[in-house]
Length: 113
Length: 115
Image (tube, rainbow over all chains, first blue to last red; front, side, top):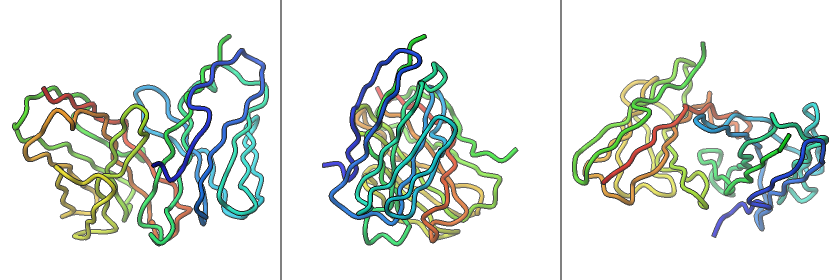
């Protein structure tokens, strides 16, 4: 059982559409991170959300941390082909004092021109 | 350029033949970690190291060994590889994991095929 559940697992959309990716858990996390991974490369950090209810924006990407710090979402406005990639959420499992990082399974996004 | 370097990038080998995947970082990071990435399972942590000479098991340590004799290097050793260790492996580092907000910097991955 994954500690962090991401949905959807796969998403294929047309350029210009909006989308939301979800990262859910039954556990409380002190913070959650979102990474993007492109083929042949390692994941690259996009953002860290720390405070419950926090919203962070990175150009057309909007990240939100749930009030209870058990879930997070990533919303992309007017998606571009360059947004194509594997989006991963990650967080420190409860009780690990920052020594560990657990990842969701990822959402594979394809934006078609 | 700040980076995490893994070698080799690709390796095809046979069951039982010992192999080592090297990982080196030039950012003076304290924390280093190894993950394997498999379809449908995401990234799973194999071993991590909080600092030199300090290593600990992650979620899937069976069949793997690591060492941290120097701050910059964190090799992953497969003493007797088996086909179920065929996977994409990533090394990562961060300044410190005591602050869980520290980003992890990943290498570009090593694709291992064990026949």
